Length: 350
Ligand code: CTP
Image (cartoon, rainbow, N blue to C red; front, side, top):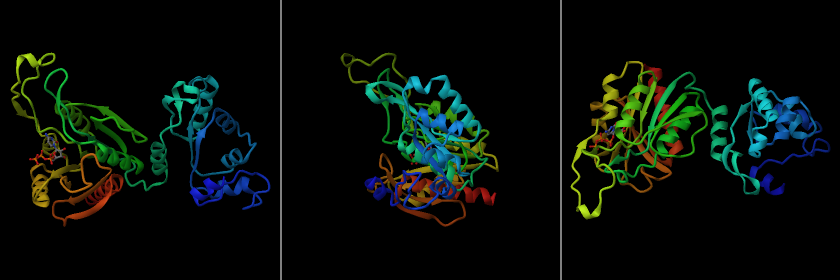
């Protein structure tokens, strides 16, 4: 209790009676909350909450609040799938209770299955979504993330160093601000709460997915590192050593974002990235013009802690007819926030 109080910089409260901070904790805590998060939410807690059964400080607080409530269930698979729990969850959802679904994974006692408490980062995403500004409410967004992989033969690919983290951060930030978000992704990272993922691997698959999805989206963010070249011929099966060193002839891939720029409607916002190692602003400004973008997020991928695979980034935001805006080294989520701020600003000026 002392440890948790110290970590939270708030007193931990467990007592319904003899509470040191207020004589009526069962109403005061719920009244003062902006959001209540129950993590983990057990089968018993969900049943009590559904029935309005107030037996302790937590259930009292839940019944005495008008704040939004987020429950994060965690229990064994058999319990999670039991009709009573399924019904309690349906009733709570129908009442507007927010839910972060449990994940599949290791459970107590070494069992494996659905019911494991969601990853803390997923819960934090959901909290930010509920508390943050909703300046993208009603707006649809598609974001591409990760590097494409272009097959050489049945087992080998041409890949690049992109981790997809910046694209996932943009998707998470857009969702937390109320947008309906689809991620077209080549990588497997924790999926931000409320985001739909379409898995792709090659530039060709990404082209098809992005072209189809972009047609009816308000905002398109192309943060994927698309291979510029792919093998002209993909060998059947595995190339064998005994057949000698292969000569791999490359051909250019389609420029996805340039195609989206050519098809762009006036009410759409199209955002591209620019990975540069020199003449950052000049090269990125040229991409802004040539690809008909509304915003370019340019990063110097040769600088320390910037770009590929890092958790941090430093970027310059470029727009037509506006001064460049520099975002100094920050987490990819903070960079995503600046990108979304710029998108909101562009939409306001349309
Ligand atoms: N891009 C794309 N399709 C490609 C290549 C790039 O849609 N085949 C997009 C990227 O997702 C990014 C933007 O174009 O939003 C700029 O990518 P970048 O790699 O910086 O530039 P390129 O256009 O590939 O030019 P260069 O490699 O010569 O710098």
